Length: 338
Length: 272
Image (tube, rainbow over all chains, first blue to last red; front, side, top):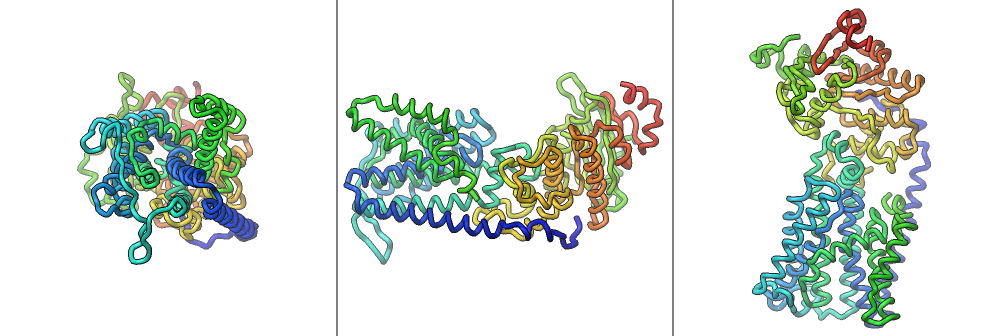
């Protein structure tokens, strides 16, 4: 190729892209700040139940967002996220039971390590596959963890799970206090916000562009020189780490770890949150999780605890698939990713 | 062209980068699908800086040849030596990294991304591909490379256009731009004018000729181009040399004039 300077006088430089990009950035950060401000203020005005509810929505949202990296950006539908979530949960449980006094950051570390291990294991067997074969393989290999956790009663508590006490919210040398529902909410919000900002950066990075290129055309991506399998491997690991973080947060919030969460239904819920909220948007899955949880809560309040809420929710889901196939935030996909 | 004794490869004349050595040398390449021999003992050489076409009737093995060369298929026999290095059986990403790019008939990578972004993904495959922290548009070297590739295929003015909104002809050219953005030494074009109008065909012909010249003039390596094409007129006007594949074997090889006057070629190819 020539190294002569390029004549592009009437191409890129006269485009109004600099201007529109700036205002897009401004609008994005204003919207972002408003949402975060509302979420910070929420526990100060909400009653106890809804405070906890909102915190849990954020945790499920983080799990869904982590799988969006695979579903929406890399085009791999993972049914293995229950294992990543579960190992994060049990990793945190292990740290909280072993260390005394229980340490928050040790729990995070153990949880992330557990999730990374599970992600490595599942990814190793599944990344060479595509589409439904990838989905099935992640499901099968993640369920190995369910079986282990369910049957290894001596360590995992089997069916009963593990119960432990909450660590203090501690920042070394600066702050140390018991979690309240409000500080718990803020802690979760900080973790989810940081995760969103990191994942957003990742999806906009050169690496993220490679993932999207794999989603669109794997053979073509290989042909321009990318070792596709390695990129997929790292994508699964990253996704697994954030799913594990969600598991850690759930464990700390609820002070128990149970095998139910490692069961593949959790992965199914995660995929549903993604589809409802809009894949490939990162925030969509959080909105999807909120929508699903809120609908379930309202239905059981209206019709009682015994009400089979999944039936009307299933109908809502089908209607959404037909009339809103892009999900609740799908319309903003291009805007959110710019 | 006959298969040469392998000792020739170690001779100084064929050492890597020697100007006289062919950029691509294929020896006894064979591919069998079960009992069917798609390619049998094909010998082929491509001189540095030339445009070389492979023609042949349907089923002659052109696509198989192409796929072997770009790592999509693993040959069952023979050797492929590119720029003095054996690349037989490598994966397509490794072959791309060695400097062979191919354009596809199906176009572009991300229909929902701009033309520039499409080319940029290819441009960053040599550096920065693993970067997870910076924005994908933040690298001056990558942007420069991508813009130059777009410029080469005449799409710089449409850099911000969504790839999916480009016309069919423009998308085909974008496809060539994506291949060019990997800065290849050898560019393989798979029927670059298929499905194009006469006007678009002429433009693409001009484009390929320009790419060949531009790169040879500026760089020391020089871009060599391999084309698989049906359109005889395009091939005759554009190419320095032509190889004719027939039933998985090379039937003839020569300049366009030689091929046009070769009785064997006239018999099996032009009449069918």
